[in-house]
Amino acid sequence: MKVSDLIKKYEGKTVVDSVSFQLPKGKVTSLIGPNGAGKSTVMGMISRLIAKDSGMISFEDRDLSGWNSRELAKKLAILTQHNNVQMKLTVRELVAFGRFPYSGGRLTEEDETIIDRAIAYMELESFEHRFIDELSGGQRQRAYIAMVIAQDTEYILLDEPTNNLDIYHSSNMMKIVRRLCDELGKTVILVLHEINYAAFYSDYICAFVNGKVAKFGTVDEVITRENLSQIYNVDFEIIRINDKPLSVYY
Amino acid sequence: MTRTHTGLFRLLLLSAAVLAASAAYLLTDSKLYDLRLFAFALKLRLPALAVMLIASCSIGAASLIFQTIINNRIVTPCLLGMNSMYSLVHTAAVFFFGSGSILAVNANLAFAVDLAVMALTAVFIYGFLFKKTGHSVLYVLLIGTVLSSLFGSMQSALVRIMDPNEYDALLVSLVADFNHVNSEIILISLLLLAVTAFALRRDLAVLDVLALGRDQAVSLGIDYDRTVRRLLLGVVLCISIATAMVGPVSFLGLIIANLARQAMKTGRHALLIPCSALMGMLAVIGGQLMTEHLFSFSVPVSTLITMGGGIYFLYLLLFKKEGGY
Image (tube, rainbow over all chains, first blue to last red; front, side, top):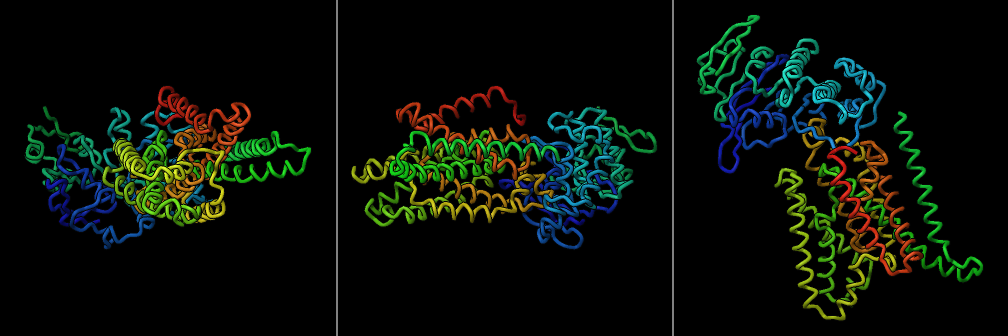
């Protein structure tokens, strides 16, 4: 997926200013940056939830707007934080929605197998018949991930997946992200607030400041004292744990 | 698949109840001993029954679809002023062309005109509103309430400067009443409902996905804007049909859609929509039976429904937490 000269304005104010980058396939890429830097807006545009003002987002050498929605849904799945479901759904029914782009509501034998596998992968078997509004936040998040797995896409876009989760569930979430990439070969792109999660669990980092890409590169290239101090305007110390750069700020 | 089976079983039970209610409506006090009197009673009651069934079916389907589009279960299309828009369109037709014009005399033509104008305005206004407000329910509801009183004032302004005789002729069609139903449009309404149902037949599964919210629906490959516009058009058609037949009934949709959700405990619209329609039939026929035989016409059925609906609405707001049933 390649983004070039992406621009978005809200009421005359430019929130995303000629952003260009190329997302490496089969890797985990995190978008980080201070509030209002435009990372979520960029995410919204590459996941076609927000209309772009100008620029190109090419996905498999074709502009995103040229794709048929149904076909694109077989290649690219999105998970945002607006998951307020107003109906009685069991975990299994939710996961089954992942097959919608393929079979449009009529599940085939193959779909059922894929749903079973997704549920097993997220270890949700014991409550697959529970209603999702009866689950805890962490369990519900896993159910949604299982739906994304059932959707069987090459690309997975996650908008702040650790939002509203405690430390235990956040780090579990990040481990799942890693597994999606390492075990299932997915390309995962996520917006993150916690720099250390980004540093520890991603391969590439794209840092935004004022609607522009400030730094894009591997974790070691981006997570340095100078870079982070520039991006966040705060003093940083970098320490290495498990050969990963972790940042301390105060 | 046991949940589907209990769902189907409940639908069957409801259908039986509707059949029983219909029979009760047709046969109570119908002078079975005299065939001629019985035939006369049937001649009056059959069209009324047909109208009640069609109207509640359209209201039930429309309200449920609308709630799913907005992703909120305490809204009805009526809260957005579709009823007052209907009144305005209807009044304007009589005002500008006269109650003697073919537009007002020919029920089918009048209906067709109402429908065309309603559909265009509603899809334009509401389609635009949903986009503009980023599908924020609060804004849409607020603007809907404002629009509702705007249409209402425009309508009453027209009524004030209207010929009193024309107004008399108009009034009959503007007040919800199951005793003087507009039975001339039964055929065209049935036809329209069938066409709408056919056009939206593939959208039952799409509605299930839409209930997950806009982001997830887009992720699952639904062309959101176009789908919502198409469904909205269907909602407007259904509401127009119901309003043209029996006049504005505001709370009915809210009650029956929520009763259906509560009774079925499922997200599948293939089960929810029929259930909502059946609930509607039961409520309307039951209400009409009470009006005719319990209150001997002193309390109109719309009052009963509004009262019941109001109480149920309060119950939903006070005792049910958001999202749960």
